[in-house]
Image (cartoon, rainbow, N blue to C red; front, top):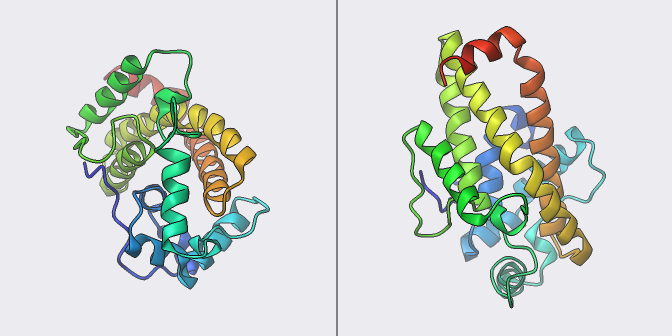
Length: 224
């Protein structure tokens, strides 16, 4: 699993939103700063995509783009000051263990790793820890890719359950807590971007839950 999400290289047409891997796209949005990432986040195509996504999710915000920063240096400084640098910790770490009080950090990290190992994946650890937002989104991207590639109903149901469980046990809860902290600071781009991600994750969790019938759940759980 590539834990250092790359900026999407292909042109994104906002009209093709339904066919996009939004897990991977959001992972790229919150990846480490680079001039190339800043250019992508500042571009017209990205702005159009975010505008379309905000409309579909019914989130009344201006399209979040890095163009609201005066330049790359300001964007990089904001990312570091918000998410990576601070005493005793950054204002809004992109780590589940920094926002979840119901379990110790080691338990959270171990559970994430256990989920990843279901697909035979391991985060590289070179850029982001196992409970980092980027790593978690890339795992969900891998689950979604495999699920859409399967034709066997039992395999599809198993992967749906995996996605539902991971969303419910991890992202749905801690992203809400992180978004509340970030909204108080209201930085350019990052606050509305995280709000969009929170709503997307919540909707995906609800849709998948609604689509899994009790009989399907029973058959999936019997194999776990």
